[in-house]
Amino acid sequence: MNTKIYVLHFPKETGDKPIICELVKKYDVDFNILKATILPGNDGLMVLELTGHRSNVKKALEFLQNYGVKIEPISTIIRRDDSHCIQCGACTGICPTHALYLDRTDMSVLFDPDKCTGCGLCVAVCPVRAMEVALGQDIVSEA
Image (cartoon, rainbow, N blue to C red; front, side):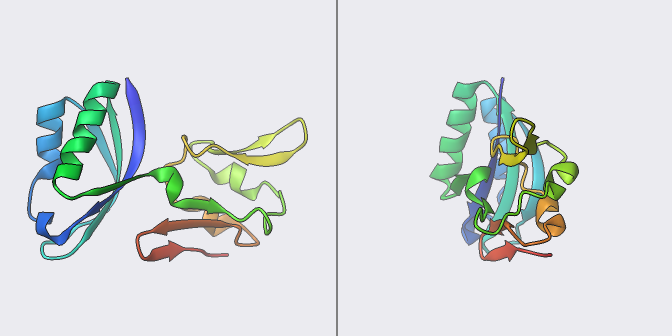
């Protein structure tokens, strides 16, 4: 089984269509909607976790693209400004998936984008605003 998290940008023409339901029925994938803003007549945004056999997930993503959905891996929306990061480790204690963790050999903070869900907790706890989650036009950056 393959599990990946994607950011989906839906064109406004798809806001009233049950695309995710079709995706599950046709391609035998499981899904978890982590965040969504989709309204009829407007562009939509969804952070979606897909689980299934690699070939099914690939077909499911192609299905979404055929509807005009732009797909990005979650790692493209998470940024850490290493020039600001002071390696304090505050983010490592709050990260629920351990995508941010401490390397005990040199006590540096490392980031594994494959484990990240884009929850934004690291953004809120970072004392120097080194972490950023950019979803579409919205950028989450707090102290």
